[in-house]
Figure (cartoon, rainbow, N blue to C red):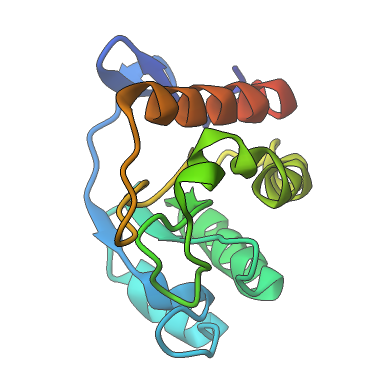
Amino acid sequence: VPSGFVTRSGMNMMLDNKVFKFTGVNDFSLTGCHTGTIATVAQCDQLMGNLRPKSVIRTWAFSHSNSAGIARVIERANYWGHKIILVLHEGAGYCSSPGYNNAWYQSGYTGAYFTWIRTIVPIYKDNPAVIWEISNEPGQAGGITITETEMKNFLGNTAELIKSLDSNH
């Protein structure tokens, strides 16, 4: 893996062959969640400029997220030397995410969700600022019951797809 990419060794996150310990913050509004407006360069810089070096910011990157907002957040993270966790799926139904039912977790995710992964991952596969997160709160939308096997299949198949598109992360 090239220098600057976060990897895993056992239970440790690694950065340049050293255990990566970091300060992290969630900011779901950067790409427009909750506010409907993507963060400006100045707003990104205000947040990122006040963080410790090599901090990690977690934000949404759903298929219905604003792609310009995603690009801006990643560009500013690179500028400040931070990492961005891009959450690719919202399992609890926040931020205008569609409801996901049992059928979706059984095999439905291989449709539009996998199309989204095949779209976004190649764009940022060479960007060391990016860290992929498969889902926020998978299976937490009301009224569904997912088996352990279904959840493992969803997570495993999704991780396999991401890795097939991006060997750096």
